[in-house]
Amino acid sequence: MKKLLVLALALSVTMIAASAMAQDTMSKDSGKTAAAAPLKNVKGTVKFDGDKASFVADKDQKSWDVMNPEALKGHDGHHVELSAHVYADKGAIHVMSVKMLK
Image (tube, rainbow, N blue to C red; front, side, top):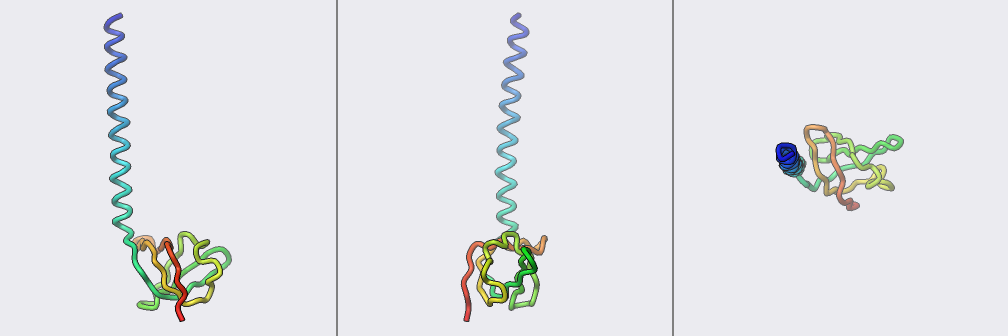
């Protein structure tokens, strides 16, 4: 009976330790994602094709897919400055704020 109790206790400690390590790994991965997608201010033009939005930067005429097109509703064809997280590897941006330009 004592062996069974010791085995159950050892298994519990192992499970708790494994759970803690998994949570620690997740927090490190989120930090890498944020570092990989820096917040930048970019100027350009918004274009919509149905529900899909794209943004064409003034600087290099590069077209970016918009991950959250609802943030740009009502700005189709407008010249704007965005504050956005830029995912260069995906060719996409996540818009944080929009400012109309003249």
